[in-house]
Length: 258
Image 1 (tube, rainbow, N blue to C red):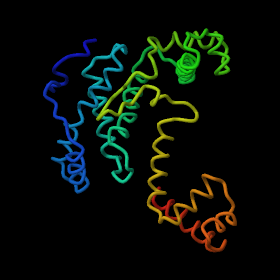
Image 2 (cartoon, helix red, strand yellow):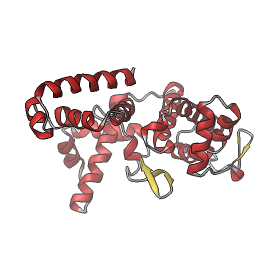
Image 3 (cartoon, rainbow, N blue to C red):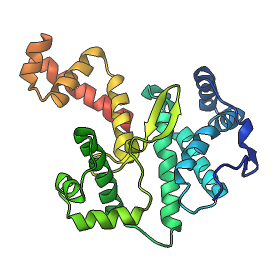
């Protein structure tokens, strides 16, 4: 598959525009007011992001025009769901959304299906290999990797063979203003799935909307595990006040999260 075509889906990739952070903010303000022209400009201004991501799927055997179109669908979904109050860059939010859209397409259109569990085993093995090499400065054996992730060696060999062409988890997927996103940032396991990642961002946004005192109470109660009495002593109010403010904060977060 030719991954370096100048024209993809009728788009001249050598002339794609690049938006500044200020331009993105201004366009998003207009998008939120229903400005369709601003939405179109924002999409065009982020096609370089889609292009950089589909390079990671050069060995998939899929037509680049198809991948580009699917990536654009992921980009548009990201625009429709992005919340500017989350205090994260649009690219940080959009990359996993676009990758997820492409992976779903490849999974649904792949004649040779590799199960999620096998893929997860392979990615965990790659991660473990990188971690061991970082610690010991030498290539680990399959047995050492198996011991680290508690998986039989034969399962690791099968999994790595199934996903084909494993790459370093530290290889950049996309970079903007010196901030690189790496393959390891997109790996999914039971503790770090894309849905969970989005939920964490939403939760942070909900907490950040609280008053300074409510924010501190939630932090002490649910992140540091302190009792209401301990919280009351630390911020110098009564336990009854802590209870009231905690309930108010939780209700506000619930209303925000929908």
